[in-house]
Amino acid sequence: MSRRNHLHNEMPCRAVGMLQVGARQSAVARELNMHLSVIHRLWNHYKKDQNASRRRVSGRQRITTTADDHYLLHCARRQRTLTARQLASQLSAAEGRPISCQTV
Image (tube, rainbow, N blue to C red; front, side, top):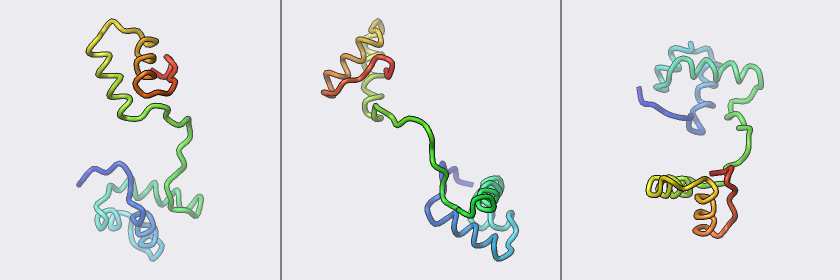
């Protein structure tokens, strides 16, 4: 079974449709090549909210991009004695926007 981090847009609707017409969860999981627990959680979520879409993610948005994180990691490995404040100032100079040392 292939590993997926999330379901594609049409997969939850397809799974819920199959379950609504009476298919068993194990049959749906086998048909869509997913784990049974994914189908079970999706069906419970649908029964509770009447919605098969993905849940909203709470929390703060990221300030740094993946490229910024790689740059910080590269700088930190190259000069191991740099403090967070110094790394933040290097990233700020490279990006042209302020980054706090808590972000680093």
